[in-house]
Image (tube, rainbow, N blue to C red; front, side, top):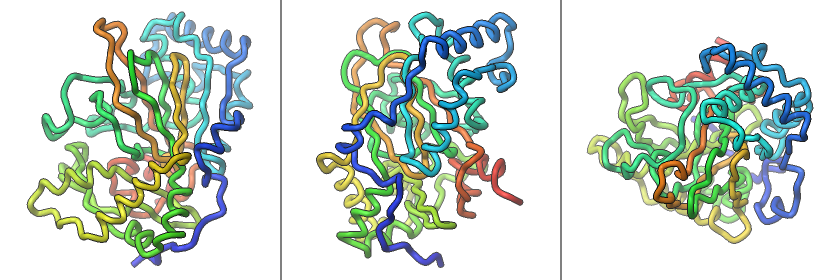
Length: 337
């Protein structure tokens, strides 16, 4: 039985959105020389016809961005937990070229990991027209629904914006460490509950076919507090008769978590524009979005691209992460046998 953490943490990853919004050090922009270098790398790869997923860092020289990459990795692990990169010239690229650009950037930060049972390495985040619940495999990023704050998989996610859509779709970023601190200050007993096991709907994404996985929301391991949370999938797992019913304390702990995230000033709201790339830690950040609407024309639909990456300076992962669909591959890549 893991000993729960019930004291607040003094950590760079603990921050409030209102205070972060008053700063600009979390924004990195491409200057003209960097953008030109990126465009040249994209053009060279496209001309060679290299398969997207075969592109390596050596195929994609970006020497002018070296300091940006160092800053990103330092902030993603050991810092505030997120960075916004601005200035990708997506208006001058085809969709295929934008995919090359995002993948190429990713090769300088880490190793891509699969995002579903098929091992897909690059996901399109857009509305498929199928609402959540229409079948057991549909996931929220495939809808236009609001998405409650959650984590993805791999050490970090990379979210590149091609088009923003007509209305809505604001991205929300919250420090899960600061939320934990607030829970500890008011209800340390519920902070302990969130470090106990919950049953989570796997949405058909586990290779072994298991319908659910069982794991805590927060884990204190090797001096690091990490979160793995998809609350909507905790709730949807309740449709299975053999899944234990949520206890009153579990439900109370989840609702307290979300109530704190919704307090004024806790979330940082971002209007992602074409050419913006959000990078964030899945260990210390929860993210979500507001509902959105697309314009009638198919060409105007909201469209983002997503990578999950294992980063070289990633934290030690708790042993139970080895049996999760979100972290199994990252665990194999980075943790000693």
